[in-house]
Image (cartoon, rainbow, N blue to C red; front, side, top):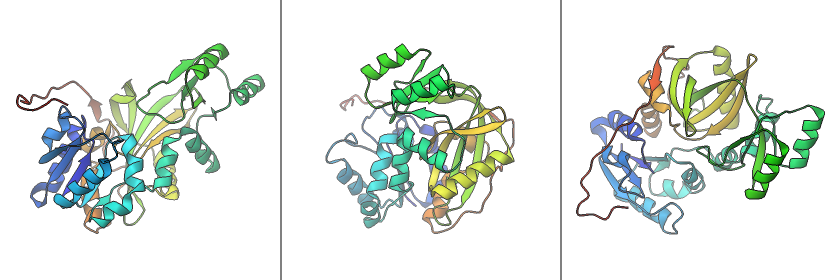
Length: 326
């Protein structure tokens, strides 16, 4: 079983986990557009590839899939997920299965207002959102929302250009500076993150790991503790199965006055997935089972509570004396 991890970047742990799952039965290949991406050096082999917006990028990746006889491929960065989903048939044609949700669903995840609309239609609590300033002003005057709020890109990631604002004049300035912004209700509550796997064969949600977030940094969880709640498990299971997600996804949740609100959905491994794995939630093995034609049993919440994750800095050293540094 050969796995291709695209845009591996700094996700060393994910590469290591897949190497352990594959064992002696295959290889883990990684790619990145920089030879200073530390995770690629944990793979069995890596390819330096063009940036994902380069015209030749897809052909380069498909050639790697053919050359390395790749069984399954997935990406660790948001901009590449739509490409994988959209070009799924081209990957299947060379014998590679993209581990990704359907294209329209991926696109909805990256359009925060569309996701807001979908959650509302499904009756799932979520933060109020506005793409029109006038609509926000009307809601403000009616008392349906109050400051502070977030002004953020409709499409964006890694908390880039997200601003907490307290006055209408600040919103006016931000809307003048940036295009395609939306206004989102400030969620003042406990934040949680869920790592979820939806079986690629049965379509059932097979595992959910929930962590209570203790400290955040640059949009990612820095410190967290494992947590369980059957009501939350049930809500998430129904949500992902009804939507038709596939493979691994990452969900941000808030709890306010006893009610869980879904904030964002990322159709990929989340940056905090190592917490789930080290607590016993082995998604790489579930991916391999699916690629081998085996459905995974449902095992939601099969982990202990109270397991803490603490991220810390590490370094990688590699000699690139004879190579151009990219």
